[in-house]
Amino acid sequence: MGCFASTPKDSGGNRRKPTSIGDVSVYVPGLRIPKPVEFSQSLGDQLPKTFVERLTALRTRIVVMANQEGPTITRTRRKTQHGGSTLADLHQALEDYLPVLLGLTKDGSQLQFKVQFNWINQEDEEEETAMSNVWYEVLSVLHLMAMLQMSQANLLLLPRGSTDGYHPKVSEENRRASIDIFLRAAGYLDCAVKHVLPQFSAEQRRSLPVDLAEGALRALCLQALGQGVDIQLGIAIDSSKATLAVKRRLSCEMVKYWQQAQDNLTNLPLANGWGEKHMLFVKWKYVEAKAAAYYYHGLILDEGNTEKSHGMAVAALQAADECFKESKKASEAFNASSPTSRTPPLFGTMKYLSEKIPKETSSKVRINRDLYSYEKIMETAPTLPDFALALKPDEYQLPSVDASWSEDRTKSSSSHITGNQR
Image (tube, rainbow, N blue to C red; front, side):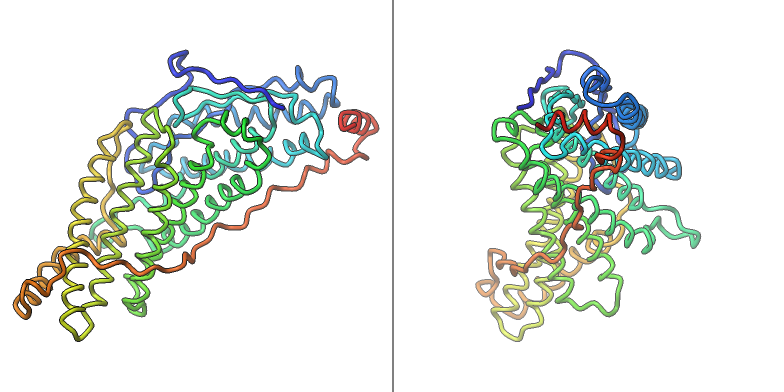
């Protein structure tokens, strides 16, 4: 059950894409925007008037805020205080709405198919998608909550000028806070995949916009985890206690997160600029992660005492250098794609590696080629170690149905709800 409708991309001007999104540390592929819903028309004879009015008020608040801030919220401005509060306010509105909305699914109620929910897409070729299924609304809400968290992480990870007169930097407090935010975003997306998508039939899933396809949701979840590990690696680089082995493990895990994210996006028909840019971002970060992994793998191999290990070290460092050069090209391609963007000043992992990789590669290649014949130097990069992925999404669970749905709320409410469950 649950009919759907899609609006072709050339049918109107509801979908607004900025020409530029400014500085990007964390890519957010646009925000899906909800369109107004007339709950009274669908539920007026099913639920008490006060209850319908509450649903309407909660969702209208979200529609107004999302439409006001959606087109600009991804534009990363220096004045982040207002942007941060807007993100928090919209996120709170979604959290307030979800428990009440879930009442429409209570005990398999047919109310879940009475209301048509309509959202403007960003990565799908179709401009908007409407479905008469409350689980589509729940899925859309979770997706938006995750994107708001990713937007907040981006604001935290934009380097700012320091009082000591040195280059702009990101504070350790912001970096650590961003890891928690990434895990929260991943938790929303993981819940969407594991607990909300199963509510749809196979046919209904095919009707979902690509923004909400399983592959897109999984890729965003993996992106959040990959960026979380990137921040962990940057913190480890700054720590005198972190060993090379720890840094190699983190960088190798980061490669796996980004590779899996790329695999999940590969066969999706991403479109409308946002989707194409999404692919370019994941490609950029995947190559960047490989540069870090080969670099630390090369340093550990170079600690060996054999010609073979030294030759493998040189090959790994050369691979790191090639990946680093490729990542700069990938970054340029990402920033040039519409909507255009900028890479903020480097910090953390890539600031350190941008200085170390060219220097270390040149030095190690020269030393080892002086010591050994050319034939002892491997021409292909050694295989990276395979580590289990340690960073996991937060265990987010859908909230309990709001207490206002309880049978003892009013006799009228009870009769309306139970009558529709028979």
